[in-house]
Image (cartoon, rainbow, N blue to C red; front, side, top):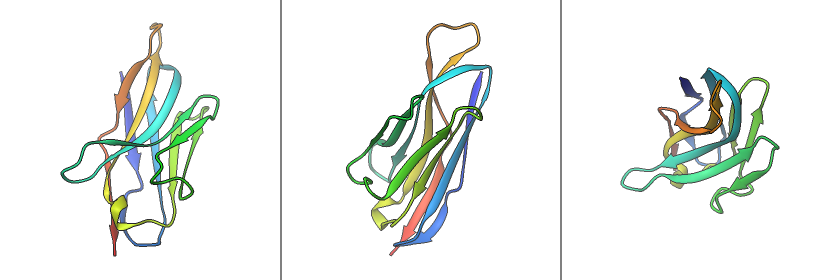
Length: 121
C-alpha cells in the first residue's frame, strides 16, 4: 500500500508565495510520474504540473512562469513552489503519483487527500 501525504497549504495574500510538499511512503519500487492537481469550488480537478523520473516537466498554461515543480527521487518526494499567487489559484491541491510497488510490474495511480490553498485579494 502506498500513501501520499501533502503539506504546506494555507492562506496567503495575492502576490505571495507558498511551497507545497508531498511524500510518498509504502512498498515503493519506483515512481514514474509525480504531479500536482487542483480543484476549485464548483470546478473539475485540473492538472497543475507534472514531473517524470527523468525530471521532464509539464505545466498548465495558467501557472507557467509562476510555479515550479521538483522532486527528490531518493526520498520519494515532490514539491510545488508557487510564486506570484493569484486569487484564482485558490483550490484544494492534490498530490498524484504513478507508483510501481514491490512485486508488481505495472504502476498504479495514487492520490493524496489534498491541502487547501487560499489566496486573498
